[in-house]
Image (cartoon, rainbow, N blue to C red; front, top):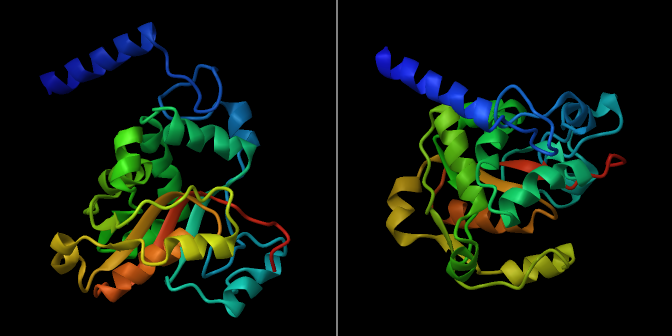
Length: 248
């Protein structure tokens, strides 16, 4: 009880000296990791209706619970995917400081958003695994943003995480400027289960976590690696996804 009061007093003192700021602007908020009212209104949260398989939002409410044409034409290997935010300028203002600006505290702020968007996926998984970084990129960046998000989500949801379950066997070229087909080619054979984690993940319902889903090539490569190593199923949960509102 005394320790709890001391922690509370310390947190209040810190807030007085360094008041918590909005995730995407300099406005003071009532607690760390929150949006101010204006930024919250500007944030595009992905909700139903969306594709039941990939989580892409539909423009037509009548499409709720259905599969988009893209998934019908080329079904992804995962069971379901969900995203918290549409990847627009506002979402980039949240995600990119984590990825490139050493704002590691953003991972803990994203975890509740992921849990809200993919609560059923989190509840139904046995273990959470992040998309891996190649060791060279890990050295230059000093952390894996997907692993930080997965760890924060695991703590929040009381789910085990295997942060090193997957590995990148080779360094791939930067994917941002590549087409979907080029990303698939670049990632072919680049991701695998870490041998020491094969027994841990075999037979498990895995929730794969990443910061952004663009073409889905990285998530597909990770999912194929997990299923090939014996995972019972794989679902995908990301902070933000590129989404076309005209998707049908």
